[in-house]
Amino acid sequence: MDIILKQDIKGLGYKYDVVKVKNGYGRNYLIPEGLAAVANKSTLKERDENVKQATFKQEKLKNDATALANGLNELTLSLGAKVGEKGRIFGAITTLQVADALKAKGFDVDRRRIEIKADIKEVGTYTVEVDLHREVKAEFKIEVVAE
Image 1 (cartoon, rainbow, N blue to C red):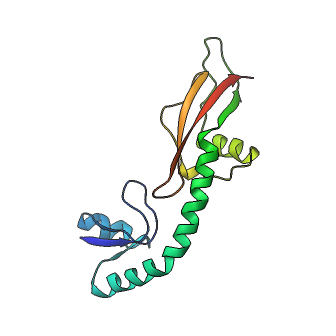
Image 2: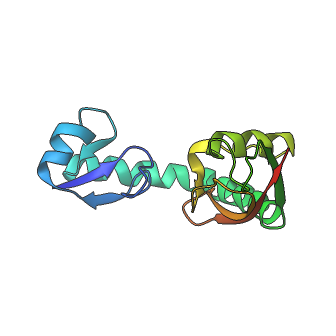
């Protein structure tokens, strides 16, 4: 079944993309939740018009995302955590903590766009990826230190 996405869905596609999904996934989840619409002649025509209108906005968003990515790529963020005897932290560092630390540094990033590649459960340096735009991704380092 071909559908048109109404918003970005991680692992599937971005807004206004036409993607092929299994019938059950489309009919039982994506369409009832308002995340997608069936791709037929009229909805494809409507999608084309929406894409034309959104092109200018997307260019501005892409430029903003590129500027933010340039700042993030040079960043090394230091996060403090309570640490046990062998260097293991109590709990784990989450995307919410990373987003709050970024906001304190002046970078406004939605926590749902942050992807931590490995579980952060020990003191050390880790790489974090941020999906800022469909064409712009940024990577920066997190240094976990003992409080």
